[in-house]
Length: 255
Length: 149
Image (tube, rainbow over all chains, first blue to last red; front, side):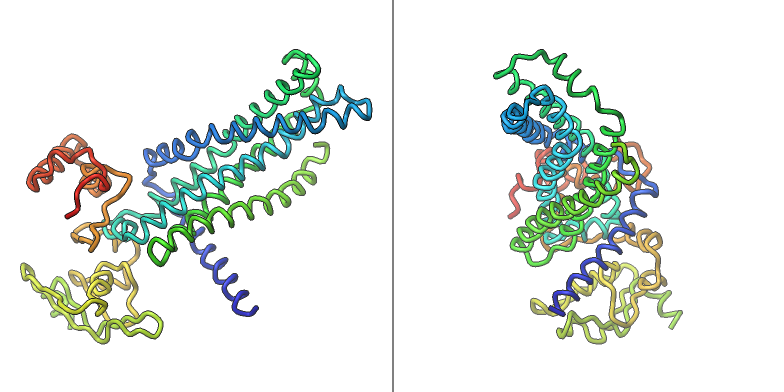
């Protein structure tokens, strides 16, 4: 138990030093714009189909599950609002965060882990290029920038497929569905959940880069880093969500 | 001592490094003059690579001194250390080419970051270097696509 505690404290301590160096690399020139764009494409554009699919599936399931329940209480007319609220406020951000932590977290952990064990990171440092700036800062920033955009795409797909599923049983135009669903939704309902995904992005990027850049032990170590990147980033995304929801409810009580 | 440091571009004294209980370097002394070729030989696991990593500051020494052109490596900040690293050519055991970059981009990588020459000239220089090795046909290949024999 004592050893586990020491190990945990050591991990958080090292993570703290890693974040400090990462922050310095991210905010001081020279900036690696080209690599940042490449990472935005790898983390954002390439994850879009998966996020869209996950969002669409959420919309379908929400519509199917809530339709009967609401019908039982004579509240079927609330279905659009239930779908929009559920997706925009919680399901969309969390599912996007978990999908990206699975896809990008594993990718970053494995790629940086592989670079570490094949001495590519040492080679970068030996040629006077800061790997924190070139490898880590670009990936973390790309995660921070891409998560909110992916969330918007996932939300759109979820709401659209929620409407499609609803239309199969009760025909309703998209315009009317959206009007009914968004009537009571204000900016304070949209903005905080979308921006909380930027924090999810930071968590996924930092944890995956940290686990990747401290890889030891050859190909087995690379596998361990990829797995631990996904497990830890997913866990921290869920924990952060609990805290952020509480903060949002305090800051925007009406929402 | 200071005169010796100035005389030898690479000057190492009483260098020690251990990993846990394993003592890898135990009081190494090394001096290399300008233009001199020095070969460090030894069985696998005797610390040759560790010594080279200590010379460019990739690993911190437990004790002792590493001086490159009169500058103590362990006392330098990241910026000063990088200025020294720019003047050192370092080839890793497994080549350590960047997987995501083509062969040409690998050769150009340090130039694009440290040189102010136009990109066209950098490209030309990289192509000249690769042509010298008979690799002009491999410019756009990734490291995984070329034979490493």
